[in-house]
Image (cartoon, rainbow, N blue to C red; front, side):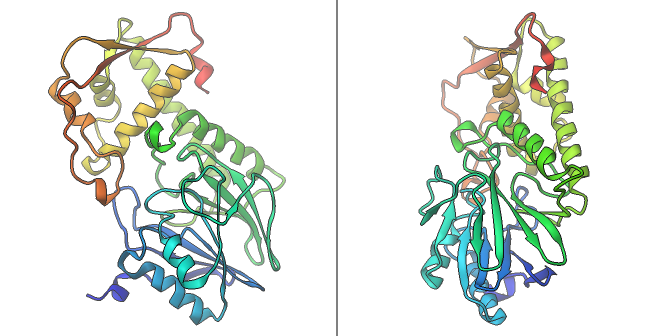
Length: 332
């Protein structure tokens, strides 16, 4: 099968918004990364060109589709710098000379820093960028008014349909408290009676047709999971280990999703630790077999990290216990 046969066809949810899904299907990317084409009278705006320099012909397909539309690529916008969203921008920029726009703190090479709430204008198309950290420290959500669709959000990996978003390790910019704050902000600004968006286009999967409902569900799910963790810790006032918490709360997790579940649980525990709700104590015992298995999982669904990591011989082991007298409702 040729590379061109592996690449999906460009789909048009409206005559001004197109989506081309990269052929990088994994447990974390669902059917692949969605690359969005936004039409303006001055050219195309591409959001998230996808993985590596030309993953199975995806970047070449973006260029080929733009030529078929008959419009030049005016700009390349990135929601965040993760392996499945941003690297394709390097080759796309080389082929089209279009500048790359992203967050000022992004490590990805770019031409323009995107400022929070500073309107970007491309001909007759205006795009409002809103910082939404949590899944990544440099994450941006884009809002645009599209004729025939109304106001839409392009949310990258902050909101996607039919599943929750995993929170990467701290060293990769993940932060659960920031993520929950971002969801609350999006709900307040874009799901109320005024200024409500009609659709959410996420970085993976199908469009969200009821944004207000999806954001409410997202927030409720995060609060419920946080409550469940704290409830389990209340049952173990002297503390408990990571593997015990994981097995209580994530026992039904599909094996393919376990790496992301491990990182998300770490993100919850770190949020509680930073909030003063949780004490984390290092203990002087070797890691048990279950702990070693969980902590040797790759940190995400990147195929480059697919091999299980061998943990260090002297893997530190921690006990997690609640801080007595703290208001456990603070995590909300």
